[in-house]
Length: 90
Image (cartoon, rainbow, N blue to C red; front, side, top):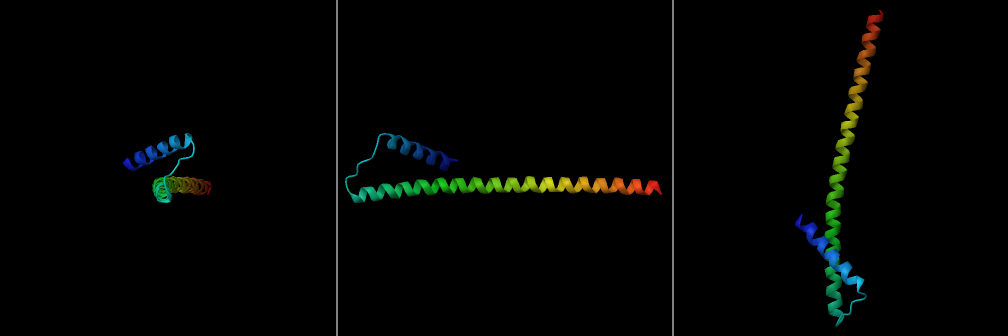
């Protein structure tokens, strides 16, 4: 959770900085360092998103599996009732 908080703070700081307009850099090296810092922040955000996206996929799969199992159980119960009704009809 600390990574999320740190990334969120970094993104908020970047938004606030961007709201003031274009940033001036003393030289190309400073610009390169700034862009590298942005790359790190973006990658951290992507990693966090990927983690939660995978977690959502697992939850979705579990729900799908549970729903499938429920349908199978209902179908088996219906089959048992039909077999019992057929046996009683004889």
